[in-house]
Length: 198
Image 1 (cartoon, rainbow, N blue to C red):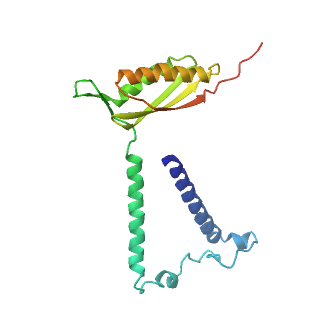
Image 2: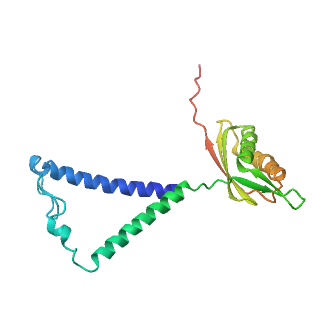
Image 3: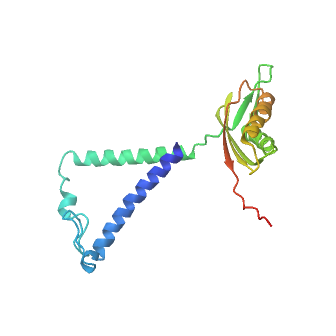
């Protein structure tokens, strides 16, 4: 979700900056006269000496009672939005620790990265899996696994998923003493060169 929002905001910002840059370029270089085309009547630039906003347009609302509160509120919204996006980017969704029920009531804490490394090693040992990536998310006592498997050309996806479910995830679940370990697996094919036939 965050990645899609990032790409959308980046694309919209890029389009706005591109349109503004082209508008300034066309007006600044006087391209409409040089190349012999006309621009719409609302076009802000009529030549290289024109400005985007005239003095009267820039100062038109300064004496209105609503102008400065509106400007301050808009800038405040922009700053709060930018800070929220920054914090959302910096916040790690990865689970740092997993709570392990040791049976004595006290429990223990397992590093999330250690459990991820074990799942990666066991997943890469499956027949047909060339690479694996694992990220634990969720809560300390109810983790979730997000797994990406890069499959070799000869791999059978059904058998790989069975091995992942019954061997790898079940082993991780029981060794960590978890009641359940839900997982989302994404399978991808590894790109390879075509084999030559002599």
